[in-house]
Image 1 (cartoon, one colour):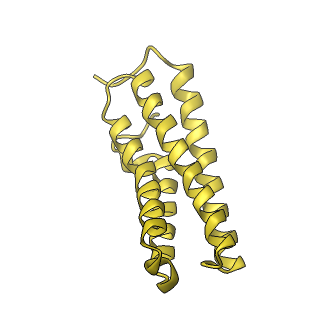
Image 2 (cartoon, one colour; image 1 turned 90 degrees about the vertical axis):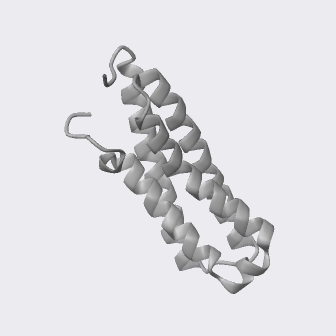
Length: 127
């Protein structure tokens, strides 16, 4: 992770943050706002991805960071599930669905790469 000094420098975090922002836009939809439970679940799942990557970055060793990255991946997959549900409920149109689906899959791919790197270098970390 040469050149990564802050958690915001991580591509996986940047893409998770972008997904969170897209979820926030969906939650502003009046129909979604009325479905408070759904909106809360989507908002919390989307916020969990970047938050867990930030927390994991703060850990000293790669195995600890990898654990938080796996939690972030699970949250991003949960967002993807909520997105499918939003489409089924008619809360998002096909264009918004496709754009957010693409953002979720990019975020998941990036965190998968981060996890692979962290698991391949278990003896490394920051002091």
